Length: 334
Ligand code: PMV
Image (cartoon, rainbow, N blue to C red; front, side):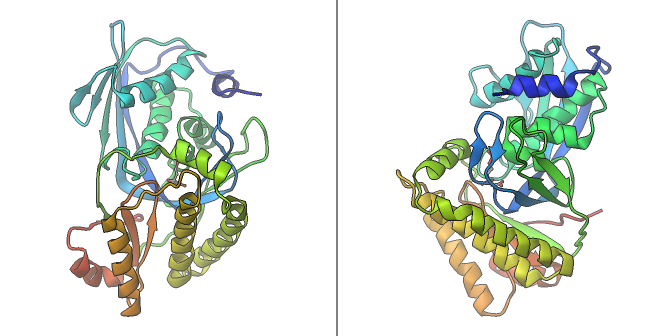
């Protein structure tokens, strides 16, 4: 069985070992899955059981700046603050970067990350974070990897990161190969300028259980998990048809159903897992009430209590009336 370093070595086989830029900066957007990734067929390489489909969040994401330094250890500045080696985020970031050092030795770096979304609250910060790291290393060496190659590398950091190499809608095809070379993001052509995503932040606190651990427990113990692949297949097909026809109702229904199915599947695990809080349940109810009042508004929810609300530009005023502090993202803003 291949490990992460084997995959990196394969992709970087013919690439230069010489630093090409002493410093540089890159950016990767966060993405929100409308059809979720929940469960791995290979936990080492983050190969998923099913495909998934996301929308990238334009200016919400990770700015990653690097600088080669003459020092004996790496430095990290996160949102303007120095982060030391004993911090989880530092360890997760540099253990990923060190995988590349296993293939190509490179000097210590000072990494500055500015995340425009809260870290680790189920807001896709790890997706944009790992996508920005692989883009940064590509720039450092001038490897000029294709986006597909970068997508495979980003997936090794966090599965959903493989969808953060593009703007707009991205499908992650699950692939069938053991080495995962066919498990990567594929950008879709649909452009939908009227689409809006509202971030309703209930809590920016760190999640109670990591998505990695929660996925493993769900897959192993939830009696609903056997139904998950077929649910994804039907939701994914419905979402893709909705994108082709710009059918918002169908997009919203399939996306919300898919999120609820994921959350119910983990609720049925042993031990039971929930990312909900009383406020997130209340917020779901408010959205259902809006629909009874004939406002086409839907939600999706990831590994955290925060809701991402889907609606169209024409309903912005009504949505803001109920959720005045909602941060509204235009995924197709120029
Ligand atoms: O990529 P991870 O390991 O952070 O998992 C992401 C899981 C969800 O956000 C809940 C779903 C998804 O497809 O993004």
